[in-house]
Amino acid sequence: MGLLSQLKEMFEKKCGQEPCVLLKNTTNKADNHPPHRPDEAPVVAGRADGGKEAEREVKKKKKSFWRWPALHFPCRKALKYDLAEAENKYQAEAGSYRTFTDAPASKVHPAAEEQLEQDIPDKGHIRSNYKIGLKLGQGGYGFVYEGTRCKDGLEVAVKFSVKSPNMAYIRVPDHPKVVPMEIGLTLMANKSPRSPQIIKLLDWEDNEDHYIMVMERPMPCVDLKSFVKLHGESLDEGTARKVMRHVIEAANVCITRGVFHRDIKMENLLVNQNTMAVKLIDFGCGAQMKKSGYEVFSGTKAYCPPEVTVNGRYHAKPTTVWSLGILLFMMACGYYPTGYDLELISKRRWTRPGLSQECCQMISSCLQSDPQQRIDLEKMHLHDWFKVME
Image 1 (cartoon, rainbow, N blue to C red):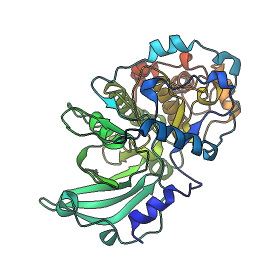
Image 2 (cartoon, rainbow, N blue to C red):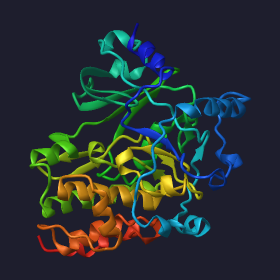
Image 3 (cartoon, helix red, strand yellow):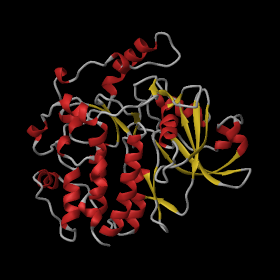
């Protein structure tokens, strides 16, 4: 059985551990969950009855979603904010980008390793124009391999992803056909003028049962998690500040271009150890920006904001700010914030020996339990912490 066949079979078996998970709020009352709007109904592209079929499929699989117990965040009562006001504050137009289905894509748990040369059919321009090498990594959506472009020897990263039955598609400018959501979001984030903080998509191929993405492979680079570990499990403020500048810029570029990454974390950030340049990768958990809030969280549990379980709805910008706060906390402190940390942070009384007052304030401004009390994403780079002399 080839790799594609094995991965497809895993769709039906519901794997246990996934780096990018779907969380549906299960702790709130039913009246806290407004029904889907017509433009948010899950639709399977290419089928006349796709909407009803996908809806039945979602209901069928609802019980198998990972039920995440409510987190014990402090000041829960303070989270009764005005959703209508929040939607007006955090709305973002997606321009001419149109989503063909709002149903989240299923996840793939990697099957046993086999030689890729035998598993992926020898057809398509990517297999003809790129030499595939060793595996670089794997995740919930597929495999990433090192590759070399035949015409000039350029070293690249090649990602193979198997399509799920309810794969989400999107239409983007200058492309006549709809493309898988991950490809579309990456194209949108790569829109000109290109941001050096976003991984560059060099080539892609959309096949019937899988798609392939060819991306730049900057060297020498390691993911941020490995980078922090090499520095003794935490970074000094100066280094953390350099990293955060790049990550905040990447997050703002995505939002401006109608892309909600939803999974900004250490593993999805590449750091050049020589230049300290940082690149955001992996849009597999992403979504198109929209005016209304989101109800299904697709991302990493540790970076999930409290409003997901408290209110059953979240918005792109404050959620991104929360994830950036978690990221900074972990870089500066070397551990995930405890409940006691979050309680002090909510009261803006949190400090830590060895960290400047400005750094503690920066973390506290991101990790407020009430999303409306968090710092604006657009203003993060103006915080006093970034004005501290190195």
